[in-house]
Image (cartoon, rainbow, N blue to C red; front, top):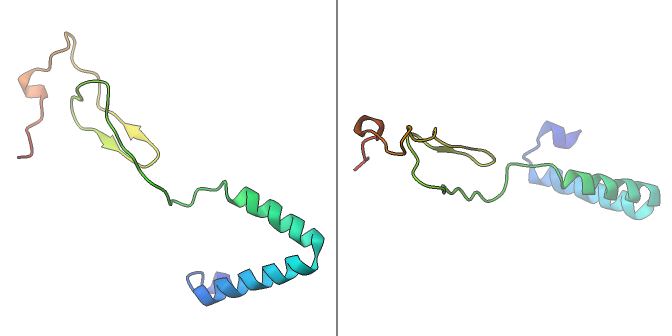
Length: 93
């Protein structure tokens, strides 16, 4: 409960870690349950991680928006494979 009141407080987080470690050392059933919980918790995404965006497969016509877990590409080029001048966005420089 103390950690819920101030989740960003490192001292409260350390206290909880110590309490769990002591309880796990004294109680084999608790230790087993804590280990199982920890294995499941590692599968939860926290928002941390590297992002490597890339675009491949030819020309991109229009805006390309990329994100951490999803990539949205522009629509296919117009029929005939060539973009019309008005379809090509201006260069930013």
